[in-house]
Length: 84
Image (cartoon, rainbow, N blue to C red; front, side, top):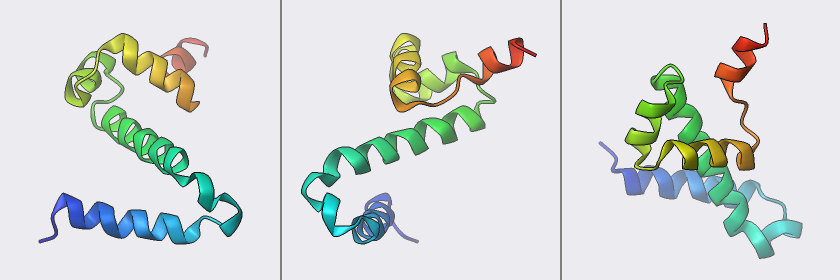
């Protein structure tokens, strides 16, 4: 069974190779944004968008979670559902 480090190393390597040579001078923020966005999305899906529980799992406050959702451009599904 692979460790978290091994899995991440393999996936980061694929991400680095997939990024064009034009952007290779500034890949850290690109990769960090993708990793954080994926992590938050998965945790929100697993908690059925319970922001309190998701924030607790992520080890951040709900206000930080909301701020990250806005900064990462992730939709707030609870707000979307209220609009229908």
